[in-house]
Image (cartoon, rainbow, N blue to C red; front, side, top):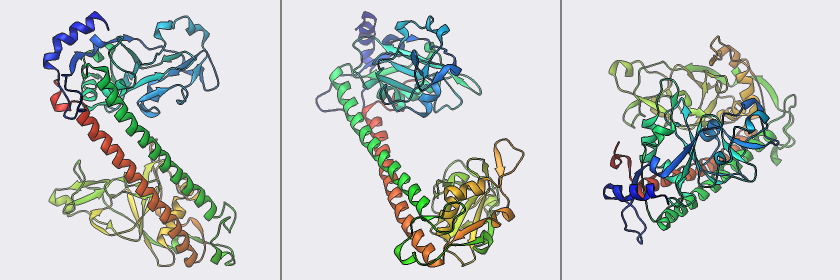
Length: 455
């Protein structure tokens, strides 16, 4: 432990905060210091991105975008897919002291999103190939003896510390974070390594459970995808590879235009709305994000409060309809989902359609057809528009799409089968969300909360 760190701790302990929840064996005051007293900072290594590959090289490279999108809180070289780099001209500029080591924190120092600025990972195992912090990152190394391995990731993801880091971000369109400004962040932490270890062990065990439940959810989604590929005919075929026993002699599926099954595609209107969801006794308008991955999420809505705007809403959410995104990005246009129940206080915006039944088919089955890999590709293929980001699909083109389907009894059987898998996916998603909510609440108890941390 450095002498600088010792003096800082002794001077600041009087004002140190403690969390609301502690393990019973620990009652000592927490320490408090600016980050610059606890960490030394190294600049990033601006290695040429066109030299990156996933096959081999002299270095492995952590990029700021990877921190935003790929990594969990802890980095383990044998588990994380970071690229190698071969750039002979850069090798001489990278000093061994700038290689990542166990216990180091790597921060993303640039982002367009306030929520991502200063996100960090803790290096648990750097591996045998030298690991370096790449473009738009800051490498922070703790002074010897301050933090046990695994604790730093939780400290820097706690609400109080994250809010302080975000306040240090500067910029208009792109936020930037410097080592100097990062050093201003005040850290409140248990001075005893044993308490740090208990906190890290508690939260890491919860993370392991979240990882296991995430894998279970992924497995269910993969199972559903494979099942749909079996239950629907491949392109150019009229019989699926997997059929329920009672329908094996039912013959080929028939082809009809979607207009045979869909009576109309009715959109809502654009209205001024608030920045929160509507309560049960309020009027709300759906967001386009309410349909995703074949699921309808009614909580994705915005409240409508002005009387003149309430008078303008139309197309309430109705049972036995399919909501289709008629205007969105090329990746999301045509996204759709089946609606199980009436929700009379929620209405569609102008960018969503409600597909209403002619009574000639099972609407849940049709939603699975339109949400299948082939269905999504067909809808996306209809997209047009001059905007580089937003695309539209037209009613007449959608209603003219060819749909291959069996008799209605088999449609219902397939829909029931896939719906039962969806129920399992929903239950697993809720279980996972509950664990994440529990972890968030636990973090707020185990670390000082935002209002207690001085600016």
